[in-house]
Amino acid sequence: MAESRLRVVFDAHALTPHRSGIGEYSWHLLCALVRDFRDEVDLHLYVPSGIHSAASEDDIARLTADVRDGDFFRASHQWHLPTLLRRGAYDLLHTPDFLVPLRCPVPLVCTIHDLIPLVHPEFIPRSLKVRLLPVFRAWARHAARRSAAVITDSAHSRGDILRLLGAEETRVTVVPLAPTLEVTGAPLAPAHAAVLREGRYLLYVGRHDPYKGLSHLFRAFAAARSEGALDGVQLAVAGKRDPRYGHEDLATSLGIASDVVFLDYVDTSELSALYAFALAYVHPSLYEGFGLPPLDAMRHGVPVCCSDRSSLPEVVGDAALLFDPENSEVFSSVLKEIAENAILRRVLIQKGSEQVRRFSWNQTARRTVQAYIDCVRRV
Image (cartoon, rainbow, N blue to C red; front, side):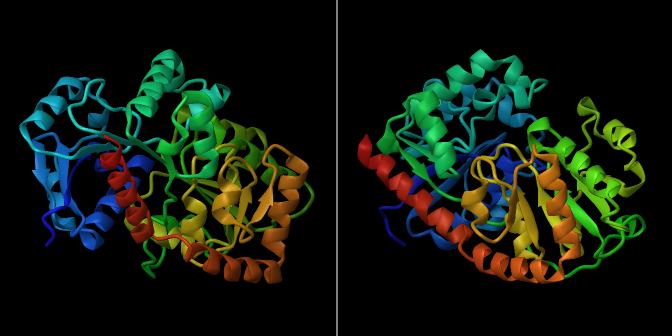
């Protein structure tokens, strides 16, 4: 094995038992690094017990077993991590978000997935990030300017980073993500089979924040129903319930509560079947740094209709039926068409199969390693 491997420390505190998007990104990137790039990267993980070498997927799972929700945001990282970095001969630190140390003794690489609170604070008015917007802005700007390399998921996000954070253009690299969910071939979990009709539900997977567009989806679904369409079709909403935004009350007020099934958080082991048995996948988001669920749906052979906003057209290409999520008339007609047009669904499934093959975690890791090399060369 090459002696010139880069000694990389990766902040793994997002690898919690209930992984968010950043946690999923971290897991799949790290697994690809130890699987395919051990000759280039000598990987170390920063976890609650310190900094430890990781050479396999089993190492990653073992070392992050004691990471808990919220650990990523602990203030103690600001003094604990730099102290640990000074004790080892490390080449760089990679953080999977903008929460970099204010002072760091090694070169920095950070991944900034999106800048939603800065671009559209009105989308997430009750988020802690918005309540602390000046701190968010200052820290993100520090990360973008202090890092020797900034990785982001899409050309759209790169434009936001350059425009809003003042990052140096040559240091901001687009590294697309890839599907995170394996196709298992499993049946619907009993709890889901009890409330859903196989092949007769539209699926949404994600959080409930207003920028995700759930309220627009409900209104479009209700409008289609009022026109006599979507007979017998359910709407399945997978994602942790968030009572702050009143989506269940909205479904009731629109008269669709009996056909909207809130599934709450769905374990990864059960999520594959939810995709596989859906009539179609609907992604109504108003803003995404990348947007993984449409790719996961395509991987499962499910037709996709998707918002035409932000980075999403980059991700889905011509393999999804695009729509304006804020135009209820257009949105409802899209729902009707994807539910009623079997030929269209077959075309989208074929195109989706081709589109999703353009993305892989090997390619994500390869381009990340190149960002590491560029980072070290700059300092």
